[in-house]
Image (cartoon, rainbow, N blue to C red; front, side, top):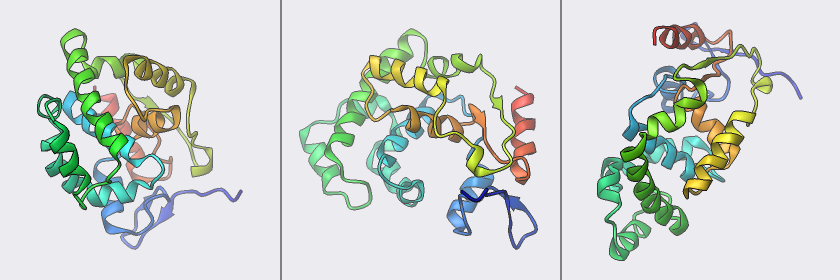
Length: 203
């Protein structure tokens, strides 16, 4: 397999190859992906969206993200937990989201579990304890070197499944951990690598 290093864009910046040149994807890469996130609700939102991504590409979810936020009341767990059968049917008829009944019902159940965790230790602490509250700074030069899952993502996946969460296999969990900055997987030649590293080192 040919190594995929950072790609030079027309603006003179080197970026990870996965966003290509799609403006929405590039903006997500430049401002969102890999930035350490500690807000519990925001982590819940990203966790749910990564679950919806299962079997699809992230750009598909990204293009529908605002519709998802509107459909799921801003991903406020205390609102989602009260969704009834009528709401599920309304969501199943909403063309702005991924209409997967199992994932919609799983989101409602995840909201209930999230609320229980918040009362005990907090969803943020549940996740970040695996990295002692600080991002892991990786130094991958080629996209092919970046793992799709790790020992930690396997451990987190097992813990989340034991709590009752769905659609959280080790590969999905690792993609989630990359996105919310638990690990810095921007390639070393990508301009965001050092920027995201600096954010993590200030924590």
